[in-house]
Amino acid sequence: MKYISTRGQVEPIDFKDAVMMGMASDGGLLIPENFPNIADKIESWKNHSFQELAFEIFSLYITDIPKDELKTLIDKSYATFDHELVTPVTKLKDLSILELFHGPTLAFKDVALQFLGNLFEYILRERNGQLNILGATSGDTGSAAIQGVRGKDNINIFIMHPEGKTSPLQALQMTSVLEKNVFNISVEGSFDDCQGIMKETFSDLDFKNKYNLGAVNSVNWARILAQTVYYFHAYNQVAENGEKISFSVPTGNFGDIFAGYIAKSMGLPVDKLILATNENDILARFFNSGTYEMNSVNFTISPAMDIQIASNFERFLYFLVEKNPEKVREIMSRFKETGKVVVEESLMKNNTTLVSAPSNTEKTLKTIKKYWLDENYLLDPHTAVGVNVAEEFNLATKTVCLSTAHPAKFPDAIKDATGEDLATHPTLEALKGAETRCHKGENNIAKIQEYLVENALR
Image 1 (cartoon, helix red, strand yellow):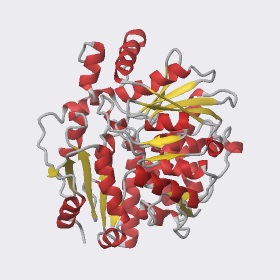
Image 2 (image 1 turned 30 degrees about the vertical axis):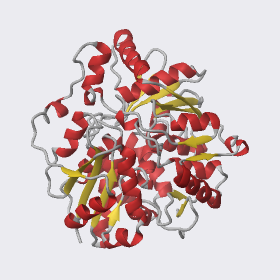
Image 3 (image 1 turned 45 degrees about the vertical axis):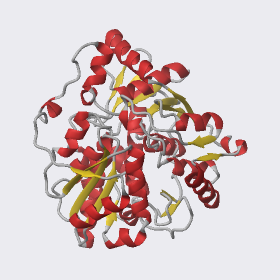
Image 4 (image 1 turned 90 degrees about the vertical axis):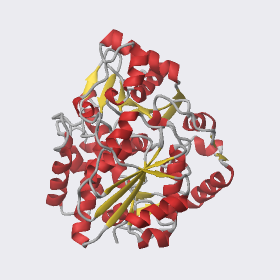
């Protein structure tokens, strides 16, 4: 399997090179040349464990790592989860919850970043190389990425987060990691500011190559690949007799739901993918109007979704415009210049899978309270957004809502919703009062790059 860029100006490369490139060198995002069709294997995979499904799916896309070594990487990555199913489904009265928070940092990002951290280590050992990871987080990516590479040789990690815009526990999960290869940077501004600095830095190819920069954000294809597995795993736990089911996905940077799009493109019987947003509804507006237009960021109780520029949107756009890289370059250039693009109605008709609607803080809190009182099940605020929007669509198919984080990461929102201190977890309780370390960085690309240079491996 080879990988190409959404902007069409990168020669096809192997998987390991795609992992190390992260963001495509032409400014686009890397994608596989094709999505293998596995519709005829769905039934034979029905009783596979998560690890077995990961091996089957990864083997289709990773053809430059020996299969026995790939299996070892998979087993090592998911041994860190506290549930034997890795990503179990809890069936409620009217829908099901896919619990993606059983990894070491209690967030769905662990599913991909435990694997990616081990991949980086494997490739660097093979190539006798060094890597400086630069990432941006709205909350959970940072701690999951840090957990994936903390203490690893030949890797330094630099994670930017918007100061005061993550939950206190999310910040503590990052800044309490004191290994010498971990560098946290708080930036005045929004996640979009952090992501903008990251993307501009990766676009400077001389700088990127000189300092061996790598990406852990979902611009890295390996992250999206790993996330496709739990759609198949959820299907096996919910579906009967080959029926189609739907998924509701609380969405910020578009990576999680794009993984679902890949799963459907491979032949998984998916009816609809519900894209749920909070007040930051740029994606909902796009899927309902064809207009992709930036607004100011609203800071909410679901901070991982407080995003205006969804980096993985470009991957979906590539397929929406019928795999035309010139059209992608035109649209993304116009968006960068004006903050707005309108996609023709004829192209919007190519989307027959994704439907979208926004929720808001009031609805989110009511949804948390409802499910606690009616079903004794506690939703985190991001998951509650997905559940609320799924209820509004009320599809005829069975619906699985992705639960992206443990509610204990958002105790204030849970208390606001229920009136009780219900959200606790031993992992997080152990962090309270921990020593922390964090560099306060200006919202300035030159200053951030200067700090990176001072601390980079060379």
